[in-house]
Length: 339
Ligand SMILES: *Cc1c(COP(=O)(O)O)cnc(C)c1O
Image 1: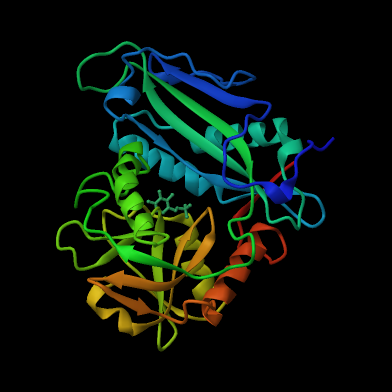
Image 2: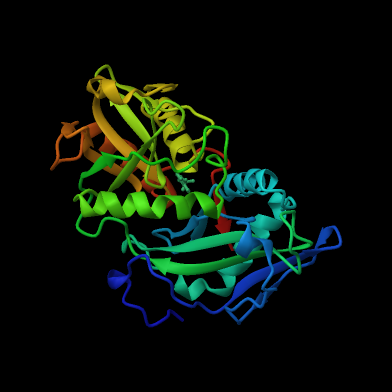
């Protein structure tokens, strides 16, 4: 029985769905976890997650295929990244199998919220770990909660894929050897003000340069950057303060193996944008947001066009989108079907 939802009207907004998964870590181990109806968490007022930002999160989507199947895209990669984030802020590991099982349980329990094929809408999963329990000093929490909830979300591009413009920020989202490579909340709190300034100037979001020298492109808002050179190479920046995007690594694989392109992870200088004929931002939310232009020191550098999506960007997008919705054959191990 499908829910009474107008799938075409969905944006990216919270909606309470039927059940969520909660597991608690105490005395050195995770409990068995369970599905619960209540979407409120009762935690100590002294929880480290509230005071010291001891927490991390993930985001992944659930796709409905043409023949009605439900599938996850590379959830093992999200599990591994969650564990990297956990270690960086001294939280316990979550076994990969337990992470995937929790996602599958939540999807099955809320299967009526998985949007139909063809709407472009998906079910978004938000796994997270927070430090809880009574504590006062700056130290790891005595207890942790791992939660996975889900929300149906609309397609990122409602009227088709269109390029947008970005501006270079003077602010940093993370320090050179700080927590930039971990999906921890503090990085996102740090990004809200620069984002607001960028929007006020008329841009979709801001681009962050490397925090040490402010000469190299790192992140595009909460997405990774890639450029296509004039000789058709797929280039993406390499840095310890970039959050490793699963979409980005998937596109690198597809560029090489499906489209026969050369792929390089290396410095991208903000003073050398001329080397690219196309550019984009990539992440789970949009797959690819084509970059029309980048504003830097008062000048707008336009790549392919401010109005049209470049052909290679379009091809990369169609390939990955097709794999996620089951229309293009996926590399082995990328798809987990929920039965
Ligand atoms: C989550 C995130 C991304 C995108 O990662 P995906 O795994 O592709 O969704 C990129 N940059 C930042 C800062 C992020 O938080």
